[in-house]
Amino acid sequence: MSQAVPTRPRILVVGPAWVGDMVMAQSLFKTLKQQHPGGHLGVVAPGWSQPILERMAEVDEIALLDVGHGRFGWSARRALARQLRGRFDTAIVLPRSWKSALVPFLARVPRRIGFTGEQRYGLLNDRRGLDKTLLDQTVKRFVALGLPAEEVRHGNVTVPQPRLRVDPENLVELRIRLGLSSRPAIGMMPGAEYGPAKQWPLGHFHELAGRLVAEGYEIRVLGGPKDVAAGEVIAEGQNHVHNLCGKTRLADAVDLLADCQQVITNDSGLMHVAAAVGTRVQALYGSSSPAYTPPLTDNAVIHTLALECSPCFERSCPLGHTNCLVQLSPQRVLASVLASDTAVIARS
Image (tube, rainbow, N blue to C red; front, side, top):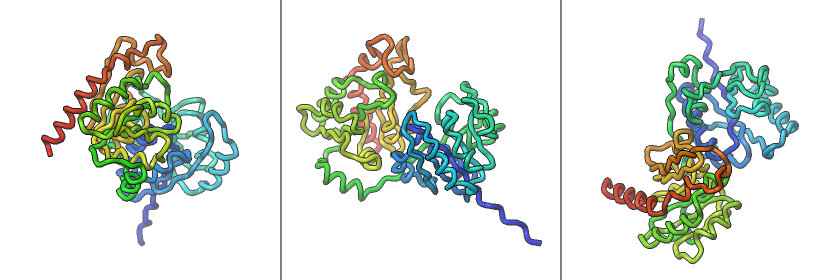
Protein backbone atom coordinates (compact mmCIF):
# COMPACT_ATOMS: atom_id res chain seq x y z
CA MET A 1 0.00 0.00 0.00
CA SER A 2 1.59 3.29 -1.10
CA GLN A 3 1.88 6.19 1.31
CA ALA A 4 0.00 9.40 0.63
CA VAL A 5 2.18 12.16 -0.75
CA PRO A 6 2.15 15.18 1.61
CA THR A 7 0.34 18.15 0.17
CA ARG A 8 2.30 21.28 -0.61
CA PRO A 9 1.63 23.83 2.18
CA ARG A 10 -0.07 26.96 0.88
CA ILE A 11 0.34 29.98 3.14
CA LEU A 12 -1.25 33.40 2.75
CA VAL A 13 0.25 36.40 4.55
CA VAL A 14 -1.71 39.62 4.96
CA GLY A 15 1.08 42.16 4.67
CA PRO A 16 1.57 45.54 6.35
CA ALA A 17 0.79 48.95 4.84
CA TRP A 18 4.19 50.68 5.16
CA VAL A 19 7.33 50.33 3.01
CA GLY A 20 9.67 49.60 5.92
CA ASP A 21 7.30 47.07 7.45
CA MET A 22 6.91 45.28 4.12
CA VAL A 23 10.68 44.96 3.83
CA MET A 24 10.87 43.64 7.38
CA ALA A 25 8.11 41.15 6.56
CA GLN A 26 10.62 39.39 4.31
CA SER A 27 12.17 38.00 7.50
CA LEU A 28 8.87 36.16 8.06
CA PHE A 29 8.76 35.02 4.42
CA LYS A 30 12.28 33.60 4.74
CA THR A 31 11.29 31.82 7.96
CA LEU A 32 8.23 30.27 6.32
CA LYS A 33 10.27 29.02 3.36
CA GLN A 34 12.86 27.53 5.71
CA GLN A 35 10.13 25.72 7.63
CA HIS A 36 8.17 24.68 4.52
CA PRO A 37 10.71 24.36 1.66
CA GLY A 38 8.11 23.20 -0.85
CA GLY A 39 5.42 25.59 0.26
CA HIS A 40 3.58 28.18 -1.80
CA LEU A 41 3.61 31.69 -0.33
CA GLY A 42 1.05 34.33 -1.25
CA VAL A 43 0.96 37.88 0.09
CA VAL A 44 -2.07 40.17 0.32
CA ALA A 45 -0.67 43.65 -0.19
CA PRO A 46 -1.46 47.17 -1.46
CA GLY A 47 -0.52 47.94 -5.05
CA TRP A 48 2.39 50.24 -4.18
CA SER A 49 4.23 47.29 -2.57
CA GLN A 50 4.26 45.08 -5.67
CA PRO A 51 7.70 46.31 -6.87
CA ILE A 52 9.19 45.43 -3.46
CA LEU A 53 7.53 42.01 -3.26
CA GLU A 54 8.68 41.20 -6.80
CA ARG A 55 12.26 41.61 -5.56
CA MET A 56 11.76 38.92 -2.88
CA ALA A 57 12.64 35.39 -4.00
CA GLU A 58 10.36 33.86 -1.35
CA VAL A 59 7.09 35.36 -2.64
CA ASP A 60 5.27 33.11 -5.13
CA GLU A 61 2.07 35.13 -5.52
CA ILE A 62 0.92 38.70 -4.89
CA ALA A 63 -2.78 39.33 -4.22
CA LEU A 64 -3.33 43.06 -4.58
CA LEU A 65 -5.74 44.83 -2.26
CA ASP A 66 -5.92 48.55 -3.03
CA VAL A 67 -7.91 50.21 -0.27
CA GLY A 68 -7.06 53.80 0.64
CA HIS A 69 -5.85 54.71 4.13
CA GLY A 70 -8.79 54.99 6.50
CA ARG A 71 -11.22 53.35 4.08
CA PHE A 72 -12.99 50.10 4.92
CA GLY A 73 -13.12 48.82 1.34
CA TRP A 74 -15.72 46.11 1.94
CA SER A 75 -16.38 45.35 -1.73
CA ALA A 76 -12.67 45.12 -2.57
CA ARG A 77 -12.00 42.79 0.37
CA ARG A 78 -14.95 40.58 -0.47
CA ALA A 79 -13.95 40.37 -4.16
CA LEU A 80 -10.38 39.39 -3.29
CA ALA A 81 -11.60 36.79 -0.79
CA ARG A 82 -13.69 35.17 -3.53
CA GLN A 83 -10.60 34.90 -5.74
CA LEU A 84 -8.58 33.27 -2.94
CA ARG A 85 -11.28 30.93 -1.61
CA GLY A 86 -10.16 27.31 -1.30
CA ARG A 87 -6.57 28.02 -2.33
CA PHE A 88 -4.74 28.37 1.00
CA ASP A 89 -4.42 26.20 4.14
CA THR A 90 -3.04 28.81 6.52
CA ALA A 91 -3.22 32.59 6.76
CA ILE A 92 -0.98 34.85 8.85
CA VAL A 93 -2.33 38.35 9.51
CA LEU A 94 0.45 40.83 10.32
CA PRO A 95 -1.57 44.03 10.98
CA ARG A 96 -3.48 44.02 14.25
CA SER A 97 -6.61 45.72 12.91
CA TRP A 98 -10.02 44.07 12.66
CA LYS A 99 -10.46 44.74 8.94
CA SER A 100 -7.07 43.23 8.06
CA ALA A 101 -8.35 39.81 9.18
CA LEU A 102 -11.42 39.92 6.95
CA VAL A 103 -9.95 38.59 3.68
CA PRO A 104 -8.69 35.26 5.13
CA PHE A 105 -11.96 34.82 7.03
CA LEU A 106 -14.11 35.50 3.96
CA ALA A 107 -11.81 33.29 1.87
CA ARG A 108 -12.51 30.46 4.36
CA VAL A 109 -8.84 29.75 5.02
CA PRO A 110 -8.97 26.92 7.60
CA ARG A 111 -6.24 28.21 9.94
CA ARG A 112 -5.96 31.96 10.56
CA ILE A 113 -3.11 33.20 12.78
CA GLY A 114 -2.57 36.62 14.30
CA PHE A 115 -2.07 38.54 17.51
CA THR A 116 -5.10 39.28 19.65
CA GLY A 117 -6.36 42.77 18.92
CA GLU A 118 -9.50 44.81 18.07
CA GLN A 119 -11.91 42.02 19.06
CA ARG A 120 -10.91 39.70 16.21
CA TYR A 121 -12.55 36.66 17.84
CA GLY A 122 -13.94 34.42 15.14
CA LEU A 123 -12.00 36.13 12.39
CA LEU A 124 -8.84 34.48 13.74
CA ASN A 125 -8.87 30.94 15.13
CA ASP A 126 -5.22 30.85 16.24
CA ARG A 127 -4.90 34.01 18.32
CA ARG A 128 -1.56 34.73 19.93
CA GLY A 129 -0.90 36.93 22.94
CA LEU A 130 1.74 39.59 22.31
CA ASP A 131 4.53 39.60 24.89
CA LYS A 132 6.13 42.97 24.15
CA THR A 133 9.04 42.23 26.45
CA LEU A 134 9.96 39.06 24.60
CA LEU A 135 9.04 40.38 21.15
CA ASP A 136 10.54 43.84 21.52
CA GLN A 137 10.95 44.58 17.80
CA THR A 138 8.45 44.81 14.96
CA VAL A 139 10.36 42.24 12.91
CA LYS A 140 10.40 39.74 15.78
CA ARG A 141 6.62 40.01 16.02
CA PHE A 142 6.30 39.27 12.31
CA VAL A 143 8.60 36.25 12.49
CA ALA A 144 6.95 34.92 15.66
CA LEU A 145 3.63 34.47 13.82
CA GLY A 146 5.34 32.00 11.49
CA LEU A 147 6.65 29.84 14.35
CA PRO A 148 4.93 27.43 16.75
CA ALA A 149 3.68 29.32 19.80
CA GLU A 150 5.70 27.07 22.11
CA GLU A 151 8.90 27.92 20.29
CA VAL A 152 8.20 31.62 20.68
CA ARG A 153 7.50 31.25 24.41
CA HIS A 154 10.97 29.74 24.82
CA GLY A 155 12.50 32.75 23.10
CA ASN A 156 13.55 30.87 19.96
CA VAL A 157 12.90 33.71 17.49
CA THR A 158 15.70 34.00 14.94
CA VAL A 159 15.40 36.88 12.49
CA PRO A 160 16.78 36.30 8.97
CA GLN A 161 17.92 39.54 7.34
CA PRO A 162 15.87 40.81 4.38
CA ARG A 163 17.60 40.74 1.00
CA LEU A 164 16.08 42.35 -2.10
CA ARG A 165 17.08 41.37 -5.62
CA VAL A 166 18.79 44.08 -7.68
CA ASP A 167 18.26 44.62 -11.42
CA PRO A 168 21.62 45.63 -13.02
CA GLU A 169 20.06 46.40 -16.41
CA ASN A 170 17.56 48.81 -14.89
CA LEU A 171 20.41 50.49 -13.00
CA VAL A 172 22.33 51.14 -16.24
CA GLU A 173 19.24 52.72 -17.79
CA LEU A 174 18.67 54.85 -14.69
CA ARG A 175 22.23 56.16 -14.62
CA ILE A 176 21.89 57.30 -18.22
CA ARG A 177 18.37 58.74 -17.92
CA LEU A 178 19.07 60.64 -14.70
CA GLY A 179 22.46 61.95 -15.80
CA LEU A 180 24.39 60.39 -12.92
CA SER A 181 28.16 60.61 -12.83
CA SER A 182 30.98 58.14 -12.24
CA ARG A 183 31.69 59.59 -8.79
CA PRO A 184 31.11 57.27 -5.82
CA ALA A 185 27.52 57.82 -4.76
CA ILE A 186 25.95 58.52 -1.39
CA GLY A 187 22.19 58.41 -0.96
CA MET A 188 20.23 60.80 1.21
CA MET A 189 16.66 60.09 2.30
CA PRO A 190 15.17 63.18 4.02
CA GLY A 191 11.59 61.89 4.20
CA ALA A 192 9.77 59.99 6.91
CA GLU A 193 6.13 59.24 6.21
CA TYR A 194 5.25 58.99 9.91
CA GLY A 195 5.92 62.64 10.68
CA PRO A 196 8.37 65.54 11.18
CA ALA A 197 9.62 64.28 14.56
CA LYS A 198 11.58 61.62 12.62
CA GLN A 199 13.14 64.06 10.11
CA TRP A 200 16.68 65.39 10.42
CA PRO A 201 16.73 69.15 9.60
CA LEU A 202 17.04 69.88 5.87
CA GLY A 203 19.75 72.43 6.64
CA HIS A 204 21.84 69.62 8.12
CA PHE A 205 21.33 67.50 5.01
CA HIS A 206 22.27 70.48 2.80
CA GLU A 207 25.47 71.19 4.74
CA LEU A 208 26.48 67.54 4.79
CA ALA A 209 25.81 67.18 1.05
CA GLY A 210 28.16 70.08 0.31
CA ARG A 211 30.91 68.63 2.46
CA LEU A 212 30.60 65.21 0.85
CA VAL A 213 30.72 66.71 -2.65
CA ALA A 214 33.97 68.42 -1.64
CA GLU A 215 35.26 64.97 -0.66
CA GLY A 216 34.56 63.70 -4.19
CA TYR A 217 31.12 62.11 -3.82
CA GLU A 218 27.93 62.36 -5.85
CA ILE A 219 24.77 62.82 -3.76
CA ARG A 220 21.46 61.18 -4.70
CA VAL A 221 18.45 62.51 -2.80
CA LEU A 222 15.74 59.87 -2.92
CA GLY A 223 12.09 59.98 -1.94
CA GLY A 224 8.55 60.20 -3.26
CA PRO A 225 6.57 63.11 -4.71
CA LYS A 226 6.00 64.49 -1.20
CA ASP A 227 9.77 64.87 -0.77
CA VAL A 228 10.43 66.95 -3.93
CA ALA A 229 10.59 70.26 -2.04
CA ALA A 230 12.91 68.77 0.58
CA GLY A 231 15.19 67.50 -2.17
CA GLU A 232 15.29 70.98 -3.72
CA VAL A 233 16.45 72.47 -0.41
CA ILE A 234 19.26 69.91 -0.14
CA ALA A 235 20.38 70.31 -3.77
CA GLU A 236 20.06 74.11 -3.99
CA GLY A 237 23.23 75.75 -5.34
CA GLN A 238 25.26 72.54 -5.22
CA ASN A 239 26.91 70.63 -8.06
CA HIS A 240 26.84 66.82 -8.05
CA VAL A 241 23.72 66.80 -5.85
CA HIS A 242 20.82 65.16 -7.71
CA ASN A 243 17.27 65.65 -6.45
CA LEU A 244 15.66 62.38 -7.61
CA CYS A 245 12.58 62.69 -5.40
CA GLY A 246 9.45 61.97 -7.41
CA LYS A 247 11.50 60.99 -10.49
CA THR A 248 11.85 57.30 -9.74
CA ARG A 249 9.66 54.31 -9.04
CA LEU A 250 10.04 52.26 -5.88
CA ALA A 251 11.80 49.52 -7.88
CA ASP A 252 14.23 52.14 -9.21
CA ALA A 253 15.03 53.21 -5.65
CA VAL A 254 16.04 49.61 -4.87
CA ASP A 255 18.61 49.63 -7.68
CA LEU A 256 19.88 53.16 -7.07
CA LEU A 257 20.40 52.46 -3.37
CA ALA A 258 22.27 49.26 -4.14
CA ASP A 259 24.61 51.37 -6.29
CA CYS A 260 25.39 53.78 -3.41
CA GLN A 261 28.43 53.27 -1.21
CA GLN A 262 26.52 54.58 1.80
CA VAL A 263 23.20 56.23 2.65
CA ILE A 264 22.29 58.87 5.23
CA THR A 265 18.68 58.39 6.21
CA ASN A 266 15.93 59.06 8.69
CA ASP A 267 14.16 56.09 10.23
CA SER A 268 12.05 55.47 7.14
CA GLY A 269 10.93 52.88 4.64
CA LEU A 270 13.83 53.62 2.31
CA MET A 271 16.23 53.04 5.20
CA HIS A 272 15.01 49.44 5.33
CA VAL A 273 15.28 49.15 1.54
CA ALA A 274 18.91 50.32 1.67
CA ALA A 275 19.67 47.81 4.42
CA ALA A 276 18.08 45.03 2.37
CA VAL A 277 20.36 45.66 -0.63
CA GLY A 278 23.50 45.60 1.50
CA THR A 279 24.43 49.29 1.34
CA ARG A 280 26.07 50.81 4.42
CA VAL A 281 23.44 52.72 6.39
CA GLN A 282 24.02 55.84 8.48
CA ALA A 283 20.69 55.82 10.34
CA LEU A 284 19.39 58.95 12.11
CA TYR A 285 17.00 58.41 15.02
CA GLY A 286 15.07 61.07 16.92
CA SER A 287 11.53 60.38 18.09
CA SER A 288 11.79 56.67 17.27
CA SER A 289 14.04 53.98 18.70
CA PRO A 290 16.73 51.88 16.99
CA ALA A 291 15.91 49.19 19.55
CA TYR A 292 12.41 48.83 18.10
CA THR A 293 12.88 49.33 14.33
CA PRO A 294 16.60 48.97 13.57
CA PRO A 295 17.96 48.58 10.04
CA LEU A 296 18.20 44.81 9.62
CA THR A 297 21.81 44.63 8.55
CA ASP A 298 25.27 44.21 10.05
CA ASN A 299 26.41 47.13 7.90
CA ALA A 300 24.91 50.09 9.75
CA VAL A 301 25.89 52.95 12.05
CA ILE A 302 23.18 54.23 14.39
CA HIS A 303 23.11 57.95 15.25
CA THR A 304 20.96 58.85 18.23
CA LEU A 305 21.43 61.33 21.07
CA ALA A 306 19.17 59.40 23.46
CA LEU A 307 17.95 62.59 25.12
CA GLU A 308 15.78 62.34 28.22
CA CYS A 309 12.69 63.18 26.16
CA SER A 310 13.32 60.58 23.44
CA PRO A 311 12.15 58.28 22.07
CA CYS A 312 8.67 59.75 22.37
CA PHE A 313 7.23 57.99 19.26
CA GLU A 314 5.19 61.12 18.45
CA ARG A 315 4.59 62.39 14.91
CA SER A 316 5.52 65.96 15.92
CA CYS A 317 7.79 67.00 18.79
CA PRO A 318 5.59 67.55 21.90
CA LEU A 319 8.13 70.12 23.17
CA GLY A 320 8.34 72.01 19.88
CA HIS A 321 12.13 71.87 19.42
CA THR A 322 13.06 68.41 18.04
CA ASN A 323 16.41 68.69 19.81
CA CYS A 324 16.88 64.94 19.43
CA LEU A 325 17.64 65.64 15.74
CA VAL A 326 18.57 69.34 15.65
CA GLN A 327 21.48 68.71 18.01
CA LEU A 328 22.69 65.74 15.93
CA SER A 329 25.33 67.61 13.95
CA PRO A 330 26.36 67.22 10.29
CA GLN A 331 29.97 67.07 11.49
CA ARG A 332 29.28 63.92 13.48
CA VAL A 333 27.65 62.17 10.53
CA LEU A 334 30.39 63.34 8.12
CA ALA A 335 33.07 61.87 10.37
CA SER A 336 31.21 58.56 10.47
CA VAL A 337 30.77 58.46 6.67
CA LEU A 338 34.45 59.16 6.04
CA ALA A 339 35.58 56.68 8.70
CA SER A 340 33.30 54.02 7.23
CA ASP A 341 34.65 54.71 3.72
CA THR A 342 38.23 54.35 4.98
CA ALA A 343 37.36 51.08 6.72
CA VAL A 344 35.85 49.66 3.53
CA ILE A 345 38.92 50.63 1.48
CA ALA A 346 41.22 49.10 4.09
CA ARG A 347 39.37 45.78 3.97
CA SER A 348 39.25 45.58 0.15
